[in-house]
Figure (tube, rainbow, N blue to C red):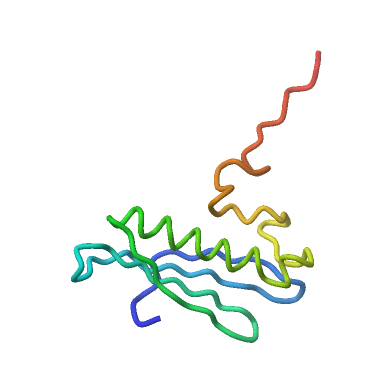
Length: 109
């Protein structure tokens, strides 16, 4: 990635880590915003960029793209790619709705 990482999330594999990196969205000549992303696997890298009408949309679309790539990966399908010990990667489309956000019911008294 030619621009600096803005935010990063680190996922776990057995004996290794996977880094999802996102750059700060930037305005481009088409009056849109571009957001570069990169996934650093133990044995390879995948990278790309997405475009949005504004910086927020560009970042959200980059998060969604990385989510799609990770969830379609063999390590994820095999149950080996996790975040904080859970299969919920906490990225769009399930972002904010997965088990990380389920509030347990208080015990009955």
